[in-house]
Length: 236
Image (cartoon, rainbow, N blue to C red; front, side, top):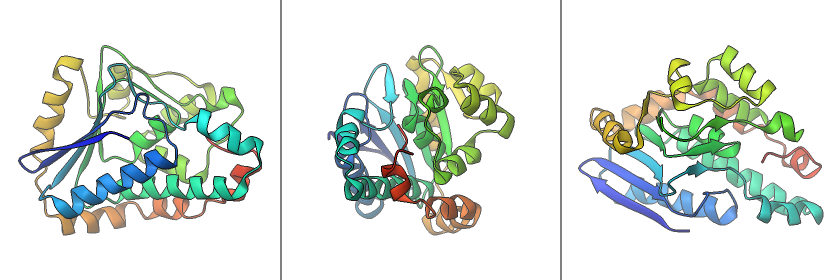
């Protein structure tokens, strides 16, 4: 999966360029390797993640890859996948520097959940929705997913989104304090980077604060039961 890392002073800019950036084992593996590179091979003090796709940030789990596994009742494969997904969410959640996501288009289902694990969210205002359609797909969320969403989304808004499947625009997300700022695509990265450059903090301090701040989310992520996924309760 093509992933580019570009340094802008102390800001590491990671660009995802795999179409709709759907989650499968390859995507998760490459993303984890990318985060390792940023942490271990750069002097970055801030991480920014964006997508190259002009309309989509991420549409979540790769169903073309997942469904054959479910049809085969491949519980071992599902266990491996869900553990890798939870590990990637946890890695972003506890990454030892401030993390920002520039939501460059639609963020649906798993893509919208992933955005919640970042510390700060910026979103283009001229195109794209944040949406959790699981209620219409008859798919409940896993505990760690809901814990991450609760971190980023005020409870009344979250309840409306997950129980109705309502799509929110960037302007609505900003009004509900889900994102830091809604921006036209022409200024999205400019605004994201302007904020990112104010976050040059010590990694060890940031890591310690995040560990304490997110104990409840980490606990929920670590309580997942992969066999439940294989039996039909899985997330798309």
